[in-house]
Length: 232
Length: 232
DNA sequence: ATTCATTTGTACGTATGTATT
DNA sequence: AAATACATACGTACAAATGAA
Image 1 (cartoon, helix red, strand yellow):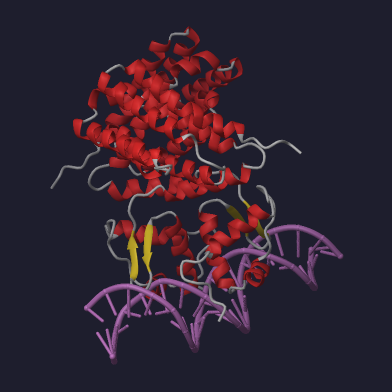
Image 2 (cartoon, rainbow over the protein chains, first blue to last red):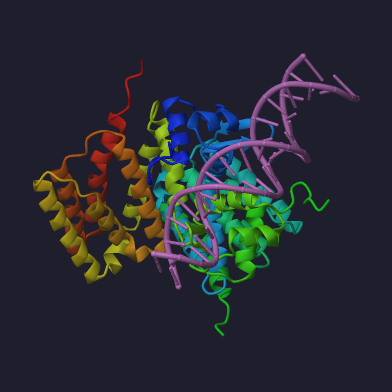
């Protein structure tokens, strides 16, 4: 029997290996499931399960009826994982979600000087436009999640793609959490908080900026902890 | 036909739903694959593929021959995803790995004050012992990855479980990267860098601590960028 | 616009390996 | 040591989606 030894290379790792050794990049096609099945000498079911794993990590991307491709950089896996974990704990503690707020605030405040120093005028302008869009929607009673997200991404722009990716991921987790947490925050106040951050940047005072960021997160944190269910 | 509508709830989401509505917690058992197959009205193959996805995210944990259980909080998915992404880019830019160093440094430096204020004596003592263990191994020419990891985890202790988890995850990614990057850093210098961090904490000077942290990461970053392959 | 080949998605049956009692 | 409950693996058949002829 040609069965692999226990603890030997898994199908998942062999597919990863295939991608690396063949120097495939994001968007490049993988062999079909049948071809992989033959090349690796395992059944198609097994290939499919391995591909499911890789797909969950966005290492590959599967298009129904078309093919399988090397995936793009993504934090979706982390978002899903954290979000679900937050829901699980939602009964007792909101632990994950609350800590997430701390973490976001920590990163943004600690980058205050860097942001101040190197935020591009274009980014600042985009952020200004976003706050205006927020204000408009707020007075119409609408939410503005997309604008909020983009605002914070632009804020992190200078810190590199990884930081931007993480910020976006945390924001997404928070959005998922928020959804299952009841009515949104006071829209007008949220807009004002973002305007305050932007004003601080243009004013050029790092201390004011840090204070504005903290003020922005204060009601969010408050909302998280307020939702702590009464222990029965 | 009872087939679900296009875009309807996926098997993955239905299993997540099952866990939440039944108030299962980490370690609690899920129905067997056959039972799930019946309850959800889909074939066992589908269940298996869905479980593979959930397992990749550590939302469930499968024990061969025993059963499937709700998983523990984990960053394994992010580690695997980031590590592979780093390998992919390793040809051209080392982009992800290099940014990871920046991010780790950012987090630790920005927590300097908090660390200083609230690191427990027990943690400090443990860290001191770790540096001693590092020194011992270093003079024997051995590496000390485990001690290094534990040191940085203790450093973040005060910042909450999420921060600790992220720190561990980043460290793991870095370790995976390091493996495929050639010989390790200068062991003696690495030990000294950790000792300097610890000394700074006990001395109680946040500025010195930040400098020590930056000094710790400098050679690591240098190593990353130095490895940029000569473009052919 | 239809048909056709290709590729992934779903289903089911069967056999085998593995851990627990 | 045996029995049981389970996950793992394979093969085949068919459904659904996509792109191209």
